[in-house]
Structures are given as C-alpha cells and as structure tokens.
Length: 207
Image (cartoon, rainbow, N blue to C red; front, side, top):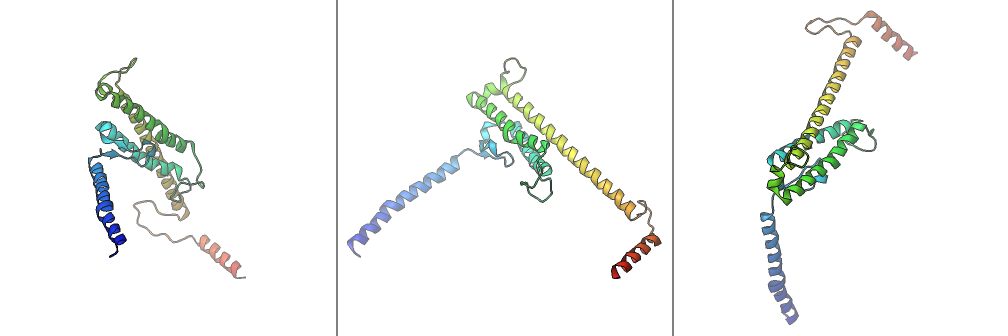
C-alpha cells in the first residue's frame, strides 16, 4: 500500500465516516424529537401544522372538512365524469366557492387563530374578543362549523340530485320496455308492432 493510498484510507476512516455518523445521528434525533405535525391533503395551503397548536375540537372539525371537501371537489369539479379534474371539465360557481373556502378562507382563519394561540394560548381560549361574546377559539370554531354545515348541504344536494336522476332513468326504462309494476312477477311478451317494425327494419337493411 502506497503512502497516498494509506492517507486516503485514514481520511475515510477517521474523517468522512465519523462526520457522516454524527450527521445521521443528528438527523435521527431531530426527527424523533420533532413535534407531531398535522396534514390536510385537500387543503395544502394549511401546510404542516404542529399538533399542539390546535385544540382537539379544531383538529376534529378540520379533519371532517378535509374529508368532505375532498368529496365535493370531485363531485362538482369532475363534471365530465372521467375520474379527474382537468381543463376538459366545466368550471362551476359551486366548485369555485368550494376551492375558495379550502384554499383561502379556512387557511386564513386557522392562521389568525394560531397567531393568537402562539402569542398567548390561554388568553386565546378564555378571553372574549373586544366587541364580541366569543373567544379566539370560539370564533374559529364558528367559522369551521359554518363551512362544515355548508359542505353538508352541498353533499345532501348532490345526493338528492343524483337520486332523482336514478328515479327518472328507472321510469324511462319501465316505459321503454313496458316493465310490470314492482311486486308483480309476470312476463309480458313484446308487442307484435315492435317485432313487425324490427323485422321491417331488418328487411330494408338487407335490400
């Protein structure tokens, strides 16, 4: 082993490896001791929020809104039912409203509360806001409850609208095929007129 090779090996063993070990150890300790973070996929503007910055009531409401908002984005955003939201879909006022709530209004309300909470958590949860009868925490809960109720109304409206479409489709099919009323187990042969028409169409196509 030449002197240069020996120096290189010593550099790796006593320089690079210890430094790498210290760096990895530091990263590992930092990761273990870091505060638990929250994440809301349907509201990425919220970013990663330290769990301790929000009360359990707020976290529960945000999780519910996140879940409802994710469903509503698909319902009102994927207008051509191709499984994705893109330029081929028609932009509706309802979809824009949902996006504005999730992208701007909710993150802004949470950011305002977090500033109050980080400044003085106890005060934000117990002291009434001037010229009001609610605390900072209660004000945020009111905002989130309003959004959650609005999302519930939109989900209900979508359910009943799609349900009506199913009822209309069923009535059309019953009329089209002259289906018997529900509960009557009878089999009705097709009208001879329909068969004659089918035969006539078939004969014309063969000419």
